[in-house]
Image (cartoon, rainbow, N blue to C red; front, side):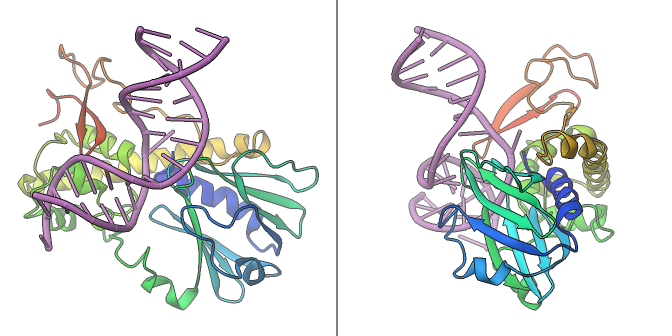
Length: 276
DNA sequence: CGGCAAACCTGCGAGC
DNA sequence: TGCTCGCAGGTTTGCC
């Protein structure tokens, strides 16, 4: 379930294993994920030392000591699992395996293969096709009420769809959009252009709060996951509305409870009474 | 240009 | 038990 908080948790877990280590072996177990793997990827990566693991939106950026950058995206079903390289037995859909000079392994497993792996050089990163059009990081200082209001202004799409647009704000997905709109008391059906300055202020605040709390939950569970299954990012969530169709609204005692509607072919969960 | 549905691919749970 | 259907956290493409 990789949205921004999960990807952030994965990055932190990867950093613990990869940062400062040499990638001794990059095992490519198939020639493509969503896209064909870059030509010569194995040779470009093997022997390089990892200088940093960063995140931009839902992208994982593994910086190498020669200026190369591995760009990974988990898609819908992608997951990273870390553990000892010795005795590793790949399972179904383990497509890429990193092995470090410290004897650790990272497995990139993705059943649906909506995820991908790409390579760029650090100076060209900003111009990369996948990154260049991304909007602001929601947890950054530049993302706030006035700038969100300006981005939503004039748009005819529902605010739910606008928040999923990575050009408006980068890193939100289907779950945290529902959660943020609930916390802000804003109906997902509202047309983006009708959101007032005050509402945008509340919405920006809700987005930061929801994401921040999810990252904190991921961080607190990271230790356990690394020690046991080694699978990163898939911690226990406590969502207010996502997946809660028919359950009582946690914010009021209305008859209907949490409703599920479909917008742009995707589920939205909300309380019609509390969210206007 | 903006907004929406469909497509990409596989797995899982519900219902018959 | 076994089949079919609907649904799934993302992103791009193509159509109106």
